Length: 68
Image (cartoon, rainbow, N blue to C red):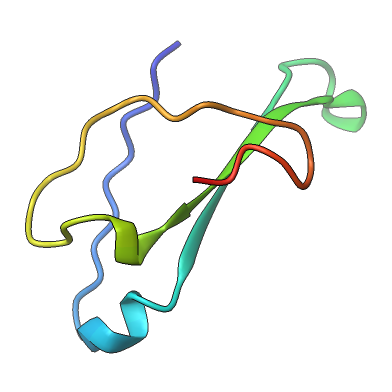
């Protein structure tokens, strides 16, 4: 399934946002106790135009890999 979350950063100074990273992890849909990490990605907010909506694909990697 495609996930399309919306994040709103009202009240956080732009300089603070540009120093942050959004971490996204994708887990399997197994039982609650058996979720398996399928991949993850780190998205540096300074690399995005925060004044514009961002739609796109991000490559998932294993822990420590796949950072954009």
